[in-house]
Length: 87
Image 1 (spheres, rainbow, N blue to C red):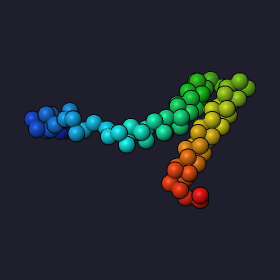
Image 2 (cartoon, rainbow, N blue to C red):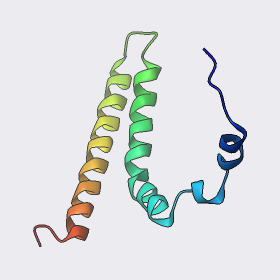
Image 3 (cartoon, one colour):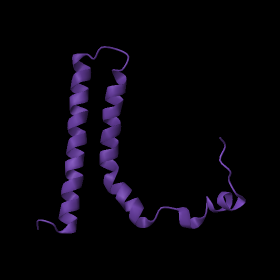
Image 4 (cartoon, rainbow, N blue to C red):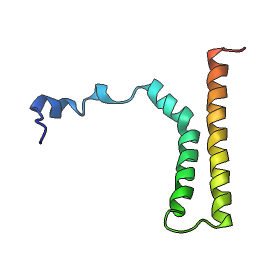
């Protein structure tokens, strides 16, 4: 089944108001360490999909998992500090 797209949808799909706001871009910047850590963890897992993980692979996965967890904790701690909760 093919969706029907009107001319209006095609024109407004690239309108200026469709761009991310400054607040959204700031939120992405704050979350970037978590995103990068998750990508590293995925890379470590992907590297072992077609073979038996070696000790080096297992260490790489453990380190990547710890970095991803630390990045999430840092993001949450920063969010709590900024919002004033617990201060």
